[in-house]
Image (tube, rainbow, N blue to C red; front, side, top):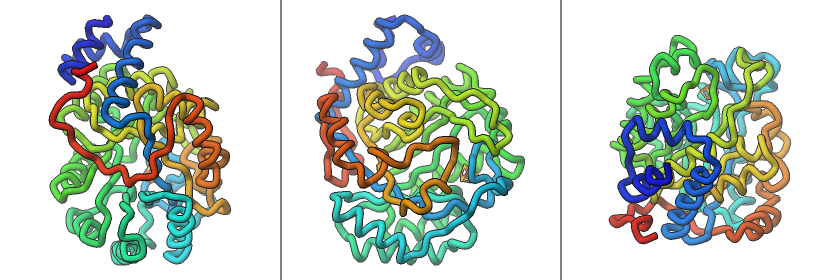
Amino acid sequence: MKTLVDKLCLKHTLSAEEYRSLLLCEDADTNAYLQEKARQTTIARFGNAVYIRGLIEISNRCRNNCLYCGIRKSNTMVSRYSLSRETILSCCREGYALGFRTFVLQGGEDLSQTDDWITDTVSTIKHEFPDCAITLSLGEKSLATYQRFFEAGATRYLLRHETFNEAHYRELHPSEMNRDHRLLCLEWLKIIGYQTGTGIMVGSPGQTIDHLVEDIQFIERFQPEMIGIGPFIPHADTPFGNEPAGSIEMTLKLISIFRLMHPSALIPSTTALATLSPDGRERGILAGANVVMPNLSPSSVRKQYALYDNKASFGSESAEGLKLLEEQLNEIGYKISYLRGDFVSSNHCHSEEL
Ligand code: SF4
């Protein structure tokens, strides 16, 4: 099985059957070897520096009803908020002073935050912080709207496809949403010129190994600049409230596979990993991730942005916890990079040099 890891490292691709075998492999030596190769590949490409992105959760209102999501429209238990532009700017100011050079504006599909309003907000941030990158994660919009946001100064967009398999997509989403439209949005983002991020939930209800293989092969074709992978974590007030959480081990394995498949990708060690395990973030880094996204949202609203239960948003997950994060990263031989950390494609394969 280690030869499959070597092959992935060298060729950046495997057949569907080979990916399947790797995902099913429970041999501890092979899995450790996979992580080691992924870690070496990350270090060859990025050194031991981990990029930080300041996450600002601008609204927990959403017109959609994704079955797994704690802030879905039908959840009446949530106390809703939308941040004002001034509050978002003060989060950016606080983050800038701490050293952040990327701001990620994430939120539900909140119709009260109109396209005009978001465009103006992006321009205002860009004007005040011209040296910073702005990432948006605001769901599905029209091509024209994505274009306006881009022209206003947002250059990165995160839109996880969650699952590539169409039937599985339907199990996770209400009938008004469809997988093809999600994929179309991703195409638009790439065409416009965004550094585009997509990704999946690991262990979502109904997910099979074959679905994961389809996800891997989609990501291999799509070549996103950013790949977000987190374990599914149930939220009690959703239809999936009693489902088991996804596996940390499988999430780590996928991080390693994506790193070997796409050495220059920006791969976050997600909050969901940190939520499931106290050392989850560090384990994600050791499996090949190279980004963390501490929370810059006002502390008063953090608990209300609960996509799943017990979501980590304090301690080293929060922006104030940067020192703690630095210490945790130091302990595993890494440090924070305060650079913007744009995607840079590599013309040659560093992993081949290992
Ligand atoms: S996952 Fe996103 S689009 Fe779906 S309900 Fe939650 S916030 Fe809305």
